[in-house]
Image (cartoon, rainbow, N blue to C red; front, side):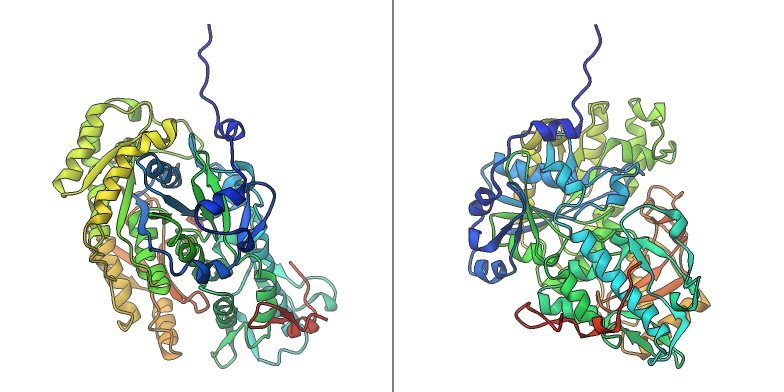
Length: 568
């Protein structure tokens, strides 16, 4: 007799009973006049919903973050969805807000971003593939600007752009390493000016970051205009507005700015919108989704990418600055597997079997790797937010290992709950939901980590020492010149987004736990003026994961009512 295997995520999703999306919307006070359906189970929400819901009570705002993950991830999205379902099980109304999946990871080892087991957003296949086309809109808007840069060079380069100083590349929502670095403009003279270029993945586009941080259509229009594509021969920045590309980009993005409404397997509402990566961008879903979701129930539960040193830090210091929303509690997801890995005694490689020792009962390794959990809890606490530890349970875990995690949480005065939401859905997250309700009732003391007025070097050092536990920073000569340049053109008062590996609190992916005695290497600094932050690139970017343009396209724009003008 053969042992039956558990159902796959796709099999579970296909067996689920879903409600019409109009019914899900009605449950949260969104009428049909504010919906644009995409089939029976997906709809876009019109931006008018922000004003229409503004007078309704404000929900408690909860962010889900995690310990430093293994290469396989520790289940933040699954926990976010499971917690929303768990809230319903204890009689609370919750809405989840998550990022949209990039098809790079979806078709890679990591997989999609719909959650897993019995804690999924649905419809599963639509979410992990094209959904409503937002990813393609970001790709097209980004590459329209790329094409208009090269068209500008070909048409005579009126702005005096230095081809060697162009920083704007192209994007594609596919993993294709052969396109990372290419030469453009080869062929006949009419094929363009030869220069070096390349492709990034769409989720890394500044247009994606802008989509996630915009608060309105006109705000997005202004942000797109502020994009810096490079420098002219006098070393002055050149923007998308100067190229007269921002209007066309906004036209392409005018539907993508509307959040998508889906549901969980237990028919809890889920807002899915924007998908900036968490290691090289700010790693959070959209502000617009949150401005709607914050008025749709008792709790709005959102997710921040990777560990609390990355996604949560940026959630606090970038996203919350822009949205004006203050979190009431944070969930720090951990697994027994992750803490054993942070003991330094096991090596986990994506796509390969887990080390056999990881499956053995070893609470001593959980305690040893618990240094990482302690540091990530500290990273939440220094922002004045009350954390809750969520242990994402796996079948091979041992009770002694759960006790070890509870001991760590208790030593820091933090609530802890073991959650079986993957296997049991919302019922398995009821204990976690109760703990989050208690934490969110505590008085909020939320604060930013640094004032914007601090110099860029000081802001980088603050994050490095207080969040990452580094002894200091080492700024390369090139990065130092870039910092001076950005401060000289008025960009010094922007918040910081540090791009580094997600596999360690440090910039070295091999260092586990909570390493000490190291310094953060700042190799390059870039301005994301449209999104509204400065990138400090720390570590090896290789370890972090074309259209034609016609001069007439410069006349396309969008007016204050969202109507396209100048298209014909």
